[in-house]
Image (tube, rainbow over all chains, first blue to last red; front, side, top):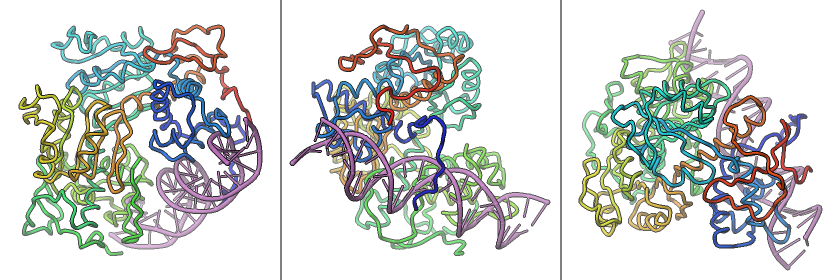
Amino acid sequence: MATGRTHRPATRSRGIPEATVARLPLYLRALTALSERSVPTVSSEELAAAAGVNSAKLRKDFSYLGSYGTRGVGYDVEYLVYQISRELGLTQDWPIVMVGIGNLGAALANYGGFASRGFRVAALIDADPAMVGKPVAGIPVQFIDDLEKIVEENGVSIGVIATPAGAAQQVCDRLVAAGVTSILNFAPTVLSVPDGVDVRKVDLSIELQILAFHEQRKAGEEPGAGGEAVLPPSPAASAVAGAPLRGAAATAAEERKGPDGDMPAVMPA
Amino acid sequence: MATGRTHRPATRSRGIPEATVARLPLYLRALTALSERSVPTVSSEELAAAAGVNSAKLRKDFSYLGSYGTRGVGYDVEYLVYQISRELGLTQDWPIVMVGIGNLGAALANYGGFASRGFRVAALIDADPAMVGKPVAGIPVQFIDDLEKIVEENGVSIGVIATPAGAAQQVCDRLVAAGVTSILNFAPTVLSVPDGVDVRKVDLSIELQILAFHEQRKAGEEPGAGGEAVLPPSPAASAVAGAPLRGAAATAAEERKGPDGDMPAVMPA
DNA sequence: ATATGTGAAACCCTTCACAGCT
DNA sequence: AGCTGTGAAGGGTTTCACATAT
């Protein structure tokens, strides 16, 4: 439909598309692996395969960064590693703080990938006095009362929240007030932040639910597939209101969808 | 992200857009909270605010499920909870296996959100004989040699991989061969799977890198912002090849972008 | 009066296919 | 000959704005 022209007359190419930004780390990882094996150049085809995308997409992505390839040859691995790292801001040092050093927080702190590539754990913070002073991943846990001081003294602009859901918004507010402008949230809550603050969310149960959706669909289409639940069809499945659905998995079998086609029983049009 | 798009000319209009599917869990969580507070109905405006999206998007999303609202009134909370749960497949029981019970795997297993809402940890599996038999989150760890048997006996169709990167593809292959068709991957690797298998990826360091990109941009635009790294502008920044960039953060300051405008120095047109 | 449900417009992202450089 | 870089086409997603129902 040849989009009408909206043309941003502003300084062109101000923006690398968000979708491209989200893939740069993938390319970087693949390139780093090639670099370790001393591979000098790659074609878009090879690199795309390593990163799990198709080559046209990769070339388009790189075109937003500039022309870093050589026609007829491919891309210089070292050069691309450098350019992408720079574009992502990984040539500078990013001190981060992690708040909430429970099971998950501790695991994340121990996770190697954290420290590498430009990120440095400047502090671990927890609200439990019993945790304070105990070293996790070699870093002593500090008390939450010092959060503001820690953020300011270390010039922290990226914070990781791994607290329980109930504490997340409050911690977020304090981080933001102290100067943090990017937050990676592992707590299962929606955080509200002022304009100018970026939040990214990692949510285990959301990911599982999305998988379940597709899995259910597969089961409906392919009769032979495994993973069928053990639930026997329960008698009254017509209930609409009092579906418990919490705690343990609901037991209501619910009218199994037809062999394939179907649609919410209610409201046909 | 989404994966292996098995072209489906099949049952026509049955498709809920992927973007919508990815938001349903958010709505469900917000609705569950309302349900706990015994709120009977919500407007699209209120619910959208709670879920962190705008109301037009929410209404459009719900329109794919059917007409579950009442004009002039809003949506019945319990009813919507039920319908979304059903759509996501959460009214059935999904046994999952988790492979790789290290720091992260153990933290995930202990994570409450896992067990609730339709998911049940059927087994924890690890390759370390020393771990076998030890209970994690109340579930004894089993040895990886039994992976196939465990998957088959429990009718598992969803697997979670929390192994080191090096082991992930191999574990993935075994899971798939045993019948798993959905995988949630926490290992920092691209997994390749046959068509019909869905993979979703959770990658800590990718998320941080995306945040760093935006953070860098902010710093470039707003001169007063915090988080400035300590790097002094180094002399020769023209280097193209030997950028180390590994291990600790590279020290090369690299030509700082201009005060505001900026863009790859190379190739303007 | 008020809030949903939805065509249509606008926008963003991916894919195609080939011109252009090495 | 080979591979990048990119207009253009094609889908998908978001937003608008209002007809429609209670």
